[in-house]
Length: 334
Length: 290
Image (cartoon, rainbow over all chains, first blue to last red; front, side, top):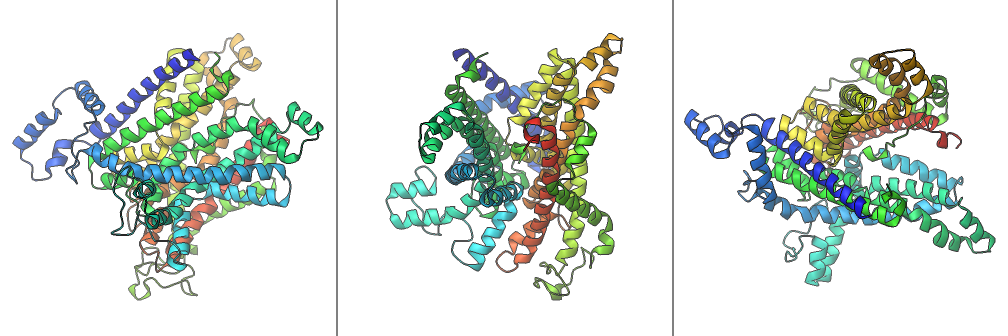
């Protein structure tokens, strides 16, 4: 196990170096002359030379990369061209919004998806199963930015049940502790505020949960059906245990590992979907920040956001892999 | 959506079996949708009732009616015509992005698997790094570097799908190159290049082509997604994602602008998924019995 962890950590290091290279190439080499970009069309030749020297653009590429890496490790990505804040600070302010949205979706997808998967497996071949499997196929095929928009039109524009977007009603903001509106409202201890925070979160979270929900349902169904064929399950049935007990105690426990892994691996999907969801529901998260920064050519923020999210994603995947190995020791065996 | 594609390593399946898979009801519906989609791309000028760029401000934001079946957008342009012309951008995205990923990823996987050793390690490290990004983030980085445009967004989508093809192809090659017929070819003195191209490649290709079918729908979604974010097709081109962005701006008053292009994307994805699923089931012996 220790050997496996060491191996994975080494791999993690290599991947992180690779990730930083991709971001460096994309942000420093491809866009052309950054100095020209910063100074605009009216730049003088002198000014350009000075700025290039100042930014280190006159150095060889590998020196530039090492500098970039050293700065990145210290969290220094430069200053946002839009807000004049440190670029990483802007990302860190936006991140809790994305985190809250992602976690809420994951909770919804798991709480609905796992029971639905068990039920379709138990009743497989029935009309319920067919309908649910068709719905999950739709769920997987649904462009979520369209589905979110449809939900928005129905529940916000037509029915008026939920707000059309945003994080909290204007003028009602809990004191910032974690940056997550629901958590901060709970910490503030104001029931009205908690209700509003959840009220604003429901629709975006459901939108983002669509695809993972469909996938989790399908995987749970497949795993439960596979686990139900094991001998110990037959033994349990032969002992005269009730169906409910057999499913909960014997089948689901064996199906749990792959299901947990699949849930963990939804993160990439969720982070990608968050970009679109935040746009639809006007949420000030990292995804929206990245898109706005790309559109306004605010490279320091794009770079900080890209490295931050990629590093986070790599780390979470490592944790998922390790927990998988922990749950199923066969994985770690060479 | 990239998470749905599974890696399957299987021995070659006769082409005939794949055709048989397409006769199943689900696959038939998928084929009909795909055919309809192709027909619309070609026949758009004759089928579309209006020019997709024609503005008619007196009709701005008018709801679906006999004149405009899908309604009109904020400039009075006919939404139905714009949706029909949108099939063209979608088809280009499939051909270029999916094609690029298939060709580059396939070639990388083939060479990596066949050559082994350092080449293999180098290619697979690159694949690992590209797969380490959440896929849309990688697309965002590429678009940020190249600048927002339809061409660049399609290129970005092509790049983010490349590693998956490389990985699948490599797995296939590793499985196939130990087969008896490959050893037979080697033993009669066939040169490595010939073995790779004539014996290993054709027998590794089916799962990769199935993946290309499954990914076609995803490519349409991702391209539209980038356009929706303002990073792909730019106005006034009739692109489904850009239409959805228009619909987003007017969602309180004009539901039809967003509804129909999204429905079109959805149908195309379902179509390609149905065909791809049927083909994949046929390739995967564990699923074939179901």
